[in-house]
Length: 279
Image (cartoon, rainbow, N blue to C red):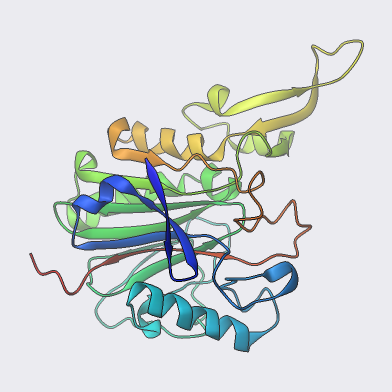
């Protein structure tokens, strides 16, 4: 279950079960509570979108105050819809605006560093190894999902830190739902290696005579696709929480790239090991 929380003017969604982890801070922010205007109203977190850097900086200040995290501790990358994974070592530090780090997932065991991914319709996935105290933030659009970015993050956690899949907890935040995400055959074919392709796709049927035939279009459930990829590598189903909120159906609360014609902001999703909790 996920809770919708309002802190000051900022709204965010959080996994209720993760309240059991005092060493963890996380949020899937909505678009509400910032100062951006027009199509980008109001908590737009991307300088690339909105073209008003002063407003974006103010929005980051608002987020920093809301969550009690210094603005300089939010770590961002340039998301490129790939499967690149950045592991943050002690000599790596955030910057604003972010440096030209082209990745779609970030892993760290460093305390006090909020790993950020920004979304408008893609899937934000936050992970934690609750035993070894390691966190990851993942941005998964259809391309990243086809490349199994979630599974690759899990494998890297295992190889680098000795993470056991049974110790991993994952929270999959608001994203475009299967109800609204129509894709073409090229996307279907790109998912050929997916362990549950027949379950995550539903063919769009044509109207009238011959309506039993497909139109060459498919409805894709990206959230379910990433869930299956994690389960395939041993994460217990009960350890994977899904918000099950379609950003297209609720675009008054969440940014949504397709429905708003590409003119929209970006939502902040982050996870952090709390440096104030040492045990």
